Length: 169
Image 1 (tube, rainbow, N blue to C red):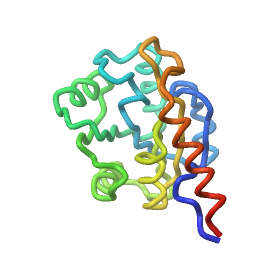
Image 2 (image 1 turned 90 degrees about the vertical axis):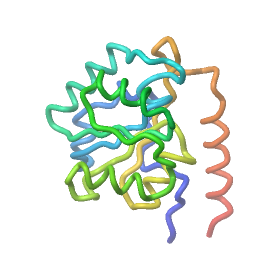
Image 3 (image 1 turned 135 degrees about the vertical axis):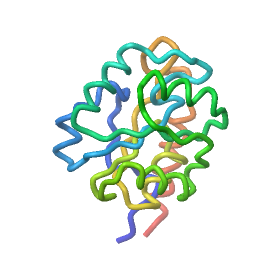
Image 4 (image 1 turned 120 degrees about the vertical axis):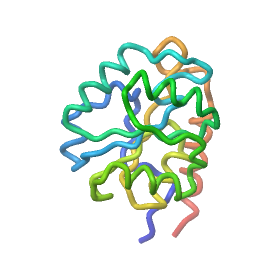
């Protein structure tokens, strides 16, 4: 049976900062490709919330981490990456394969031990699934550091992916 490329392996139902290291390790994850806008930081914000900085520091003790963003602003993504002390790719054009493959290669791990985590089905989940890596869908982060309840984009993508999955054999 063909896997629906729009369905994540794990839909957490929560923010990035609520993912536990043990949950990742139990799934064989040793490296994470992390989306930026909506996952690490709310769009149009430049200061990373302290809870995300702490989460990144905890995860870095046992996992390899890499930021991957479709945002075209090198200055913005570079600033965020510096706050987190992580390498990054901007203008990634997810779900295209090229930048995701570059990020996978940068982690120097077997792809079966790498996951991509993000808040978007049509970029993060689809891009990861196209390459056969583990995909994690998180809720989008809002400007207050909590789940962004004003954004309906993810809800539309979830509904769309479920409709498409019913149409596939």
